[in-house]
Image (cartoon, rainbow, N blue to C red; front, side, top):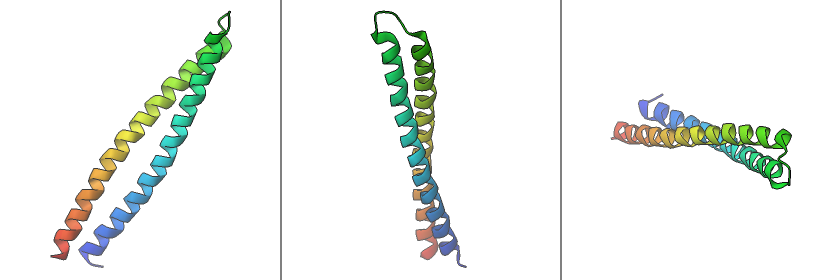
Length: 93
C-alpha cells in the first residue's frame, strides 16, 4: 500500500468515527431536552417537586456538557481529517 492509500484509509475511518460521535451528540442533546422537561415539571407546579427538579437539573447539566465535549471533538476531528487529506494530496504529487 502506498502512503496516499494509507492516509485516505485513515481519513475514511476517522470520518466514520466522527459520524458515530455525531449520533451520540444527538442523543446527548435529546437527553438534555428530557432534563429540561423534568426541570420544568419540577418547578412549574404550585409546590416545587424536588423529585423531578433535581434529577432534571443533573440530567440537563451532564448531557449538555457531554454534547459540548463531543462538539469540540468533532470539530478537532474534522480539522485532523482535513490535514490528513492535505497530506494525502501532497503524497500524490
